[in-house]
Length: 112
Image (cartoon, rainbow, N blue to C red):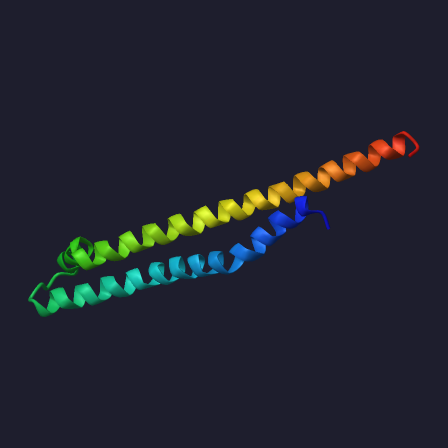
């Protein structure tokens, strides 16, 4: 196999685990965000905040909740960055395949 095609294939293989971890981190943080909100609403209730609306405001404005959101932002950025890198490698493979098909067609048309 030519190195022209092997490099993007190897890149995809190398990044697959990293991408899977990034996606797992993002999904985990999306779910944990809900748990953190519930924990903070419970903490607000224990501090005497009775209405659900006020508990929710407390949770959403709490530094720990904001920290989870920041982690989620970083996880999404990492996942998207890796996804775009992998997509670019896939496009290089597609381009190589198209070039090979064009060369075969040209050789066939010239009788070579």
